[in-house]
Amino acid sequence: MTAGPAAGDEYLASFSEPVGYLNFGSYGPPSRPVVETITRLATQAGEGVPSSGLHAEDERALAAVARLTGFDRSAVALTSSTSLGLLQIAFGVPQGRVLVSTAEFPSNLYAWWRAEEAGRLTVQPLPAQGSGFGGSGLAGPGLASEAHPLDPVTPDRVAAALELFPDTVAVAVSAVDFRTGYRADLVGLRAVVGDRLLIVDGIQGFGVIEADWTAADALVVGGQKWLRAGWGTGFVALSSRALARLRPVVSGWTGVEGVTRYDGVPHELLPGAQRLSITNGSPFASGALATALEQVESVGISTIEGLIENTVSTFVNRLEVGGHRVLSPRSAHERAGIVVLGRPAGDAAAVHARLDSAGITATLHGDDRIRFSVHATTTPAAIDAVMTVLGETA
Image (cartoon, rainbow, N blue to C red):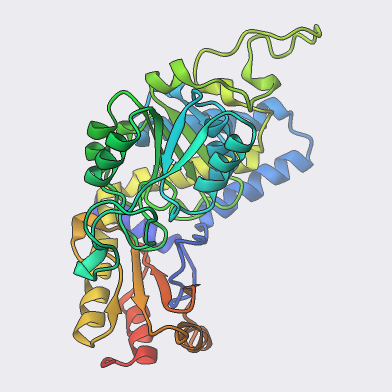
């Protein structure tokens, strides 16, 4: 999906974060149109506009989700966060073993742990395989009992685990790893997962990378990061396989037929993903998500991805030429917008503090890593500022 230069210029000009903001993996400052949408809807709510009119934003958001994911409109539903969407999926999967790496972001762990505590499934940590990025020898060959945080979740690794645990009913993975920026091969994972459910946390990649999202049986995305829609926004998209197998245990009165028949008896579930609806959501959030998604459509994901890749490539090259340790993937097809700088153990906090003092916003991970997140709006001046703090030569 592409658009003309004018649309790209308009998209870029709609944001106003500081030059040194490199933290989109944590939060993406919304555009002016998103803020204006929230303000307009809040003003209307304050003036007593009927809720039915305000909730027209729900359909606008759902239609945009369907267009950008490739899922049918009936197969998508809104949610307030990735965490809530994953909890709904976790409590709904068929009873059995769920394979997930312990290096996943906590939202993609606690959902499964809580479902396990409730007796609904068994969590199976994904065994380690391979040697991490760049042949660093972080994990030995073959399978080990525990995964290293830098081990990518690959089709080969998942296939080997499924041979050990053939009773697995679902595999959970992030489309882009929050620690390293590794971009999962969703099509390859779909092939090895087979008829099992493939659950994808898409928050670190959706809207900034071209991908076949329909490879997932359940795609869960929060809108506050790379989509730049603000907090309280997100969606779930379900395949026909997921719709047939998932039980909407965590759902509510708006997920059923005859929602306004207050007759004191349970009603039939809605036929599509809307069965996951718990209650009426915020029209401010729906409008914000719709505006953000429509902005992505206006410029095209391939354009956004290209701008990010050009900046990431420049950034990684400068770091490596300077002798700095890069822990994120080198290959363009294995990465998105995350660049991870490795530091000697115990040194990262001091470097992070210097970056912060220089007006550079990044994420400190542990005592030996700093994560930078590059978006389409990131300029060469931001990279220059980072290199000034780090030094062109390590």
